Image (tube, rainbow, N blue to C red; front, top):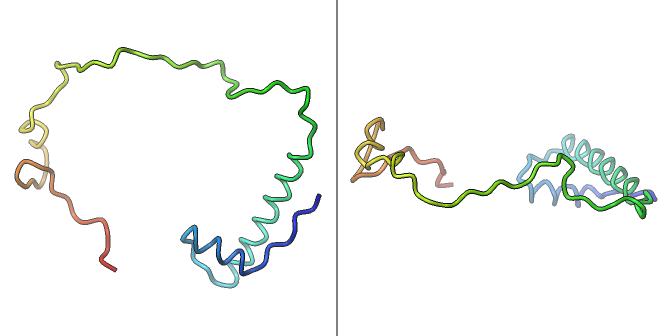
Length: 102
């Protein structure tokens, strides 16, 4: 089954949701890539998997749990934790802002 062609408006909307730059060249490239991806998904969906057992992982790894308790030998005091910091304020790490006010 062939995937319907995505319109440039649909691709522009997806690019906006993903916060991607959107000029005509990039939108056409993204349109082609998305259509190719959807075609591949359709191919996979058309496979007969009736006799294939379900699985969640194939490595044989299993969860390893341990008791959740505090290891007091590894706890730093606040003074020790802040000792290597370049800048502190009232007992906390002080860092430069990472968000713009735009």
